[in-house]
Length: 53
Image 1 (tube, one colour):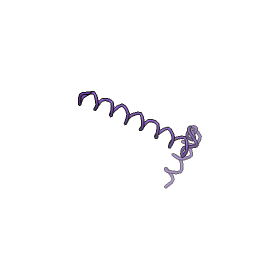
Image 2 (spheres, helix red, strand yellow; image 1 turned 90 degrees about the vertical axis):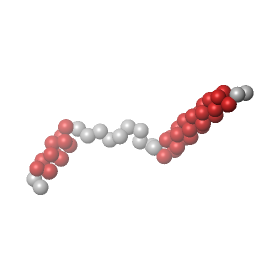
Image 3 (cartoon, one colour; image 1 turned 60 degrees about the vertical axis):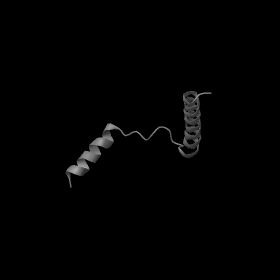
Image 4 (cartoon, one colour; image 1 turned 120 degrees about the vertical axis):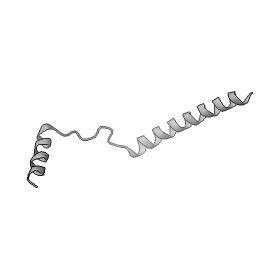
């Protein structure tokens, strides 16, 4: 096996390991996948509070 082929295989292996670890960590520590969504009312209240200060 030449050096270029070995380097490509190492890169693919490292990428696969990285993706696998990322998925494990994301599933374990990130429980809320959809962040809280604010509505238009929340934006108006925030703007009003900032204008008052």
